Image (tube, rainbow, N blue to C red; front, side, top):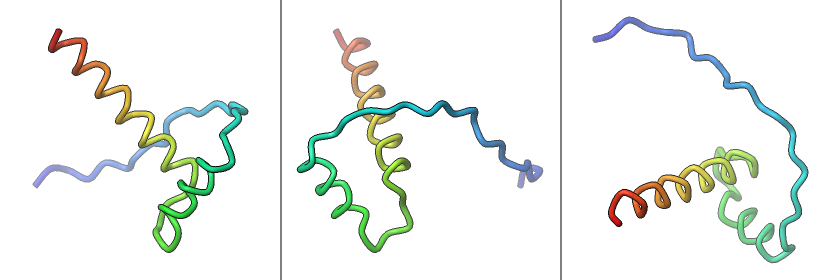
Length: 60
């Protein structure tokens, strides 16, 4: 087993973006009752989308 490392929180920047109301509702419905914030969901979804785009670039 590896040595325990205290995790670091990555630097963040506030960005104001506009979401369609129906998309906000869908995200809020998806995370309701789960240990997840709106921001954490959007960050994970964005990372997933970027990974998909990178994979598409590598495949073509």
